[in-house]
Image (tube, rainbow, N blue to C red; front, top):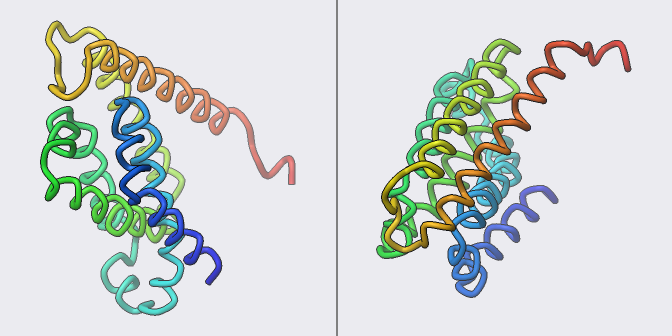
Length: 185
């Protein structure tokens, strides 16, 4: 219950207008801080729903694939420049962001991740690594401004953040491939 309470507090904090306006004012903070924190708030709140409706999660997401598919679709949508731009100009799209990231993506990620086998988990990480490299390349070397509400320098900064995150994922995958965690337990 404490996890769910802290997740709800984090969600309320992130949805507060001064915090939301500040985090959306810089492109890199919007993409790499606010959106992941919204997913984390949903992951924290998921435990309450899993205990309350265990049969729903078991019936809907028994092997983890439907939930992780929903998570991937929502995350890919929010990484598009157009969707980030729409968040700043349309209150309806911003409301969808505050609903879809915690309540659809976060909850489905928490429910699905433990159900996936190691191959499935590594496949998701590899897919996001490739996506982050592609988005980094797009945001850095695009000859035009992709988001009307952000400066080109912010777009380039976001691209480098995507590339650095992809490098971190590559390091994790290498560590996961070469190191056996059971040898250290």
